[in-house]
Amino acid sequence: MSEYMRNRVQWFGKSMSGWTETGSSYLVQVTGLICGSVFVTLLAIYLVLLWRNRLKQRTLKLQKKAFRDLMADESALRHYLAGGEITPKLLDVRKVQQKALQEVLLQQLEESTDDLQRERIRFLAGQAFGTLYRTQLGSIKWSERINTLLYIEQFQITELLPRLEEMMRSSLCSIQERFIILRIYARSGYVRLVKELLKRNTAMSDSQYLQIMLLLTDEIWEKVIDHYAELPVQAKCSVVDAMRIRNVQTTRELALLERLLFEDHVEQRIFSLRALAQIGRMSDGTKDKLLLAWHEERGIRSRLERLMYARLLGRVHTEGFIEHLNGLMGDPAYEIRQEAANSLAQYDQGIEKLRCVARVHPDKYARQIAEETLERKQYERKMA
Image (cartoon, rainbow, N blue to C red; front, side):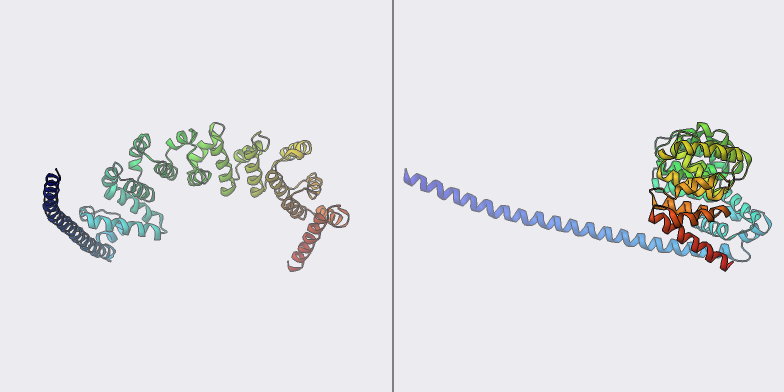
């Protein structure tokens, strides 16, 4: 039995030895094949990158040449900008030249101050790139669609507005794309914008809403004011802030701002206070109504609203406001006391109130603010 076991062990050892030699040879072959494949792949990638780099350099070189040709004194573009006549040579260009023409027109549009020339640039852009942009808007690449929208916005190609409507209805249209399209609507005075603004769009920020409001044409601005009550609250606040920045002066807009002073929505009241403080106008009837409302509810107004109120009273004068500002000198918030002191200094009678505050007010910080305001006012009079 022991002899049999020895023979089996010897046989198994010889078998394992043969398998190890065969397996090692196989592993060496596989490793060599993998290394060779990796080397070939890396070499192929390197050659492709090298070819793409050469192609890119060649394209850039051709674009620079095309750019110089378009900017030449006797070029077809120069003749068009001077006389307004589009030659077939100007539109019948290859892709490289088309890119160069796009950059030249953008540069000319940015540098030009002549309205007629700017109009010619936009018209030529519509003729040269309208079909291209229409195609690119359907691209699956988000970056290509975004860039195309930015070009359309700068050139104001109104012929593509219906195509942009289709794009807005697509589920693929991103939030950023929708925002740029709304900017294009605002710049071009496209009435479809009003319907879009009436929708509740929580994806848009306050600053984006404000950008759109500041770009509105006069005609669309009037339509937005017509539908003010139907707008979402976020859009309403942006409209009021745009009134402040645009420094509106029409009776209709001022009446809207005055009406908003008594709305239940705190944010709208704050924006209307700030806008009226900027404009510096208010009807006598509204002044009386505002005095009464603040006399009854001053204690429950927010800090920011009290601050805007103190600022407004320094821009819009009436006798009754002086006592209100005198009361705000004792406000718990430092910035409101400071704003009240600045507003009091705008009244002739307010100077005496400041002197009284500086002498007898129980709050030492209010006394200090009053003294500093009086000193600054005296210095300004000496320098005048």
